[in-house]
Amino acid sequence: MKEIKFKLLQDADIKNKIVLVRVDHNVVKKGFIHDPYRIDATLGTLFYIIAKGGKLILMTHVGRPKDKKTGQIKISDETSIRPIVDYLHSKLHIAFGIPEFEADPQKGITHIATSINHLIKDLKEDKIDGIYLPNTRWFAGEEAKGSESDKFAYQLAGLADVFVNDAFGSWQAHASTVGITKYLPSFAGFLMQKELQNLDRIYNPKRPFVAVVAGAKFDTKVDSLQVLLKEADYLILGGLIYNAYLCAKYGFDIKGIDEEEVKKAKEFVDFAASYANKLIELPYIVSSDTQESKEEGKYRILDIRTLARGSKLNYVLDIAKASFQEENVSRVFHQAHTVFVNAVMGYMPHFNEGTIALDELIDKNTEAVKLYGGGDTLQELKRLLPGLYILALDNPNYYIFTGGGAVLKAIQEGTYTGLPPVKALCQSNE
Image (cartoon, rainbow, N blue to C red):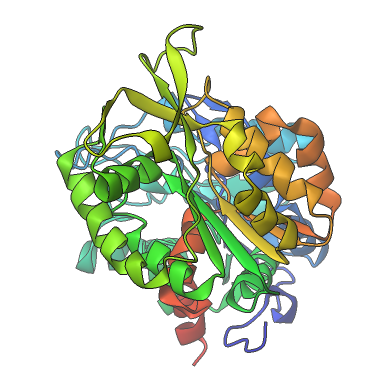
């Protein structure tokens, strides 16, 4: 990083201090861990704190237990941090205590009860190795605004002497990522530092720079897509946003793509008209009669170049392998010096052809820097190409971010200090 405006963990005095660490261990789905990558990525920070004599209290969010319509916070095993604690125990042989707090059936946990003091006493006396707070989103104050958020942040700060943010992927301005920095000396953990250093490889890429972005909703990505179209040498779309783009540009009627998405896509198409040579279209798409499975006779490969305007299509659920064999597409990837991928090209788990073809094509360019977003991009790379995934973990030309959404937000803002938690770290030390 050319300019560091916040304090680093290695500069903190943590000996005999309680260190509250915000991590992004959001890897539990329906009570099970499917990929521990985001947990493993924080182990360096945790080891360091213990080695320097610090006492650990960890916190993370898991899933979305809050109903956006009703505001009700549902507490259940599906969004519990228990599987994370069990994993850390099996991996590191260290025991975390989990405090139990009474919860309101509608509001979730309304405050941090004094009962946690017993665990903190055990922590100080080395009877336990650490404390892991319940899912931060079980607390009413975590995603609240104003005084309620501030009160929760103040309660969190009261548990510790030092705050460390090692949760790059948790970029939203919540009490546990932003509010707490007002009340404790605050530092960036090693994973946070590493993520921001690699983010600089996107801000200042070796060119040509190719970006591949997919997703379900245009409205959540349109701003970052516009920035990438301006800053990258080439941009390639996939997933449902590519379907919406095709509807907007060519007038196709694709099943499952609503008018609002097409409207948003039309804004992007109009914007992209000034950058026509940068936007690389993938011509061969896979249309299917059903989303539930990929059955012979119920899906077909179509060439968008031969379809009439206004053509009605069934679900478009993948990009065909032939798209990545097109000369103009393969040339873009072979000549690239930096590739950023935040994309799963097909509808999981049955439509995998496009994602496999994309990742294999990228890997053939042995000189390029390859930067992968987190989330589904990470999980599908591991599921579909486990050998490549293992290679990527130890190859300096690869880097897998723990949060793809955080990367897109940082790209949209044009600076890592545009991420609210990073900005909060900077402001806490001014």
